[in-house]
Image (cartoon, rainbow, N blue to C red):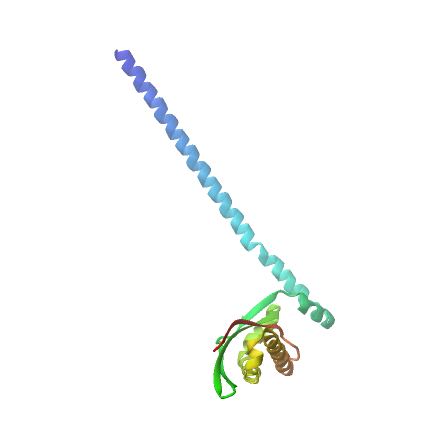
Length: 179
């Protein structure tokens, strides 16, 4: 019986040491997986810096004709006007309240910086265009499209006077309320 007890305690020790080995293997495997995942994330996130530097260097070497062609292929960036435009429009004897939220689509980061620089000019131009709109234009989709076109023309005319080029690609209404 003493021999049976000794055999049982040896089996328990062997199974306990085997369990510890398995636990150590699992922990090592988990650490390796986490380290590999972290390294992969680092390389994916920080490997793009070199390509953007070469893009900037290449863009400096382009000619004026290439810049105009490149302006159309640059990525679209949206510049939100800081405040919604709120104004009144007369319909006969009745006063209507209008609120329009606007975002401007520009092409390229240089045009984005210039548009943000001239936000007060852009806001003033939009107020002038929106203030000239009639209730009939504001009610139907075709009229809204006309207002967008008029706004785009007026904005690009204003930016051309200051910067020598049209900055805005599209005028977008992201919020529109007519009461």
